[in-house]
Amino acid sequence: MYFVKTPKIVSSIFSYLTWKIKTDEPILYLTFDDGPTVQHTDWILQVLDNFNCKATFFCIGKNVQHLTQKYEKIISKGHKTGNHTFNHVKGWATKHNTYLKEVEQCSKMVNSKLFRPPYGKINFNQSKALIKLGYEIIMWDVLSGDFNESLCKEKCLNNITNNIENGSIIVMHDSDKAALRMKYSLPKFLKFALDKGYQFETL
Image 1 (cartoon, helix red, strand yellow):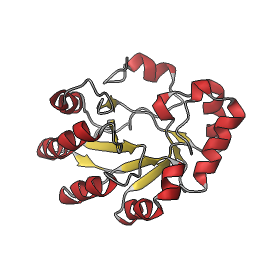
Image 2 (cartoon, rainbow, N blue to C red):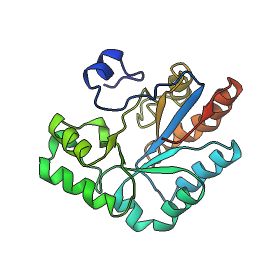
Image 3 (tube, rainbow, N blue to C red):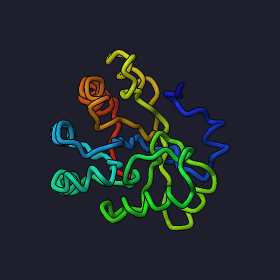
C-alpha cells in the first residue's frame, strides 16, 4: 500500500523531512529514483531536453560506479543529483551504522547533500543522524506509482496530473520495473504541466 498524494498529517508529523517546497509560484520538482540505467537514463534525458525541463535524479551508488558516464551526462545536462544509498537498502531493515555507511559510500560517487531513502523507509535516528551530517532528506508530495506492475499506464499518468500543485515534489523511476508506465507518462505529464503554466526546477 502507498499514498499517491502524501496526506498532510504525515508530512506534519514528519516535518523534519522535506515533502514539498513552499511556494506560491507554479513550480514543480520532478525527481527520478534508482538510476542511472543502461536502458532508460538517456531516454529520460532526451525527453527532458525536448520539453526544456530540469529534474533531480536520486542515484544508487553502485549504479553510478558502473555507469559513470551516464551519471556525468545527467550533470552536464543541467540536472541535479541526490544520494539514494549505495545498494538501495531499506532503512527499517538496516542497522543504524550500516545505513550511514551506505550513504557515505554513495557520497563518494554522488556529490550531493540531497538524500532520499529507498522505499521512503527511514527511521527517526537515521534521519536525525543524516540531518546532523548536513543532508536534506527529500520525500515527496506525489508518487506516480510507476513501479507498481499491476497499475495501468493511464492510471499512472492520472496519479500525477490529478495531484500536482505549486511546489509538488513528484517521484518517477529510472528502472526496468517502472519503464513501461514511466515512458508512457513522462512526455504526456510534461506537456500537461507546461500547458497548465507550470515550470520545472531542480531541488
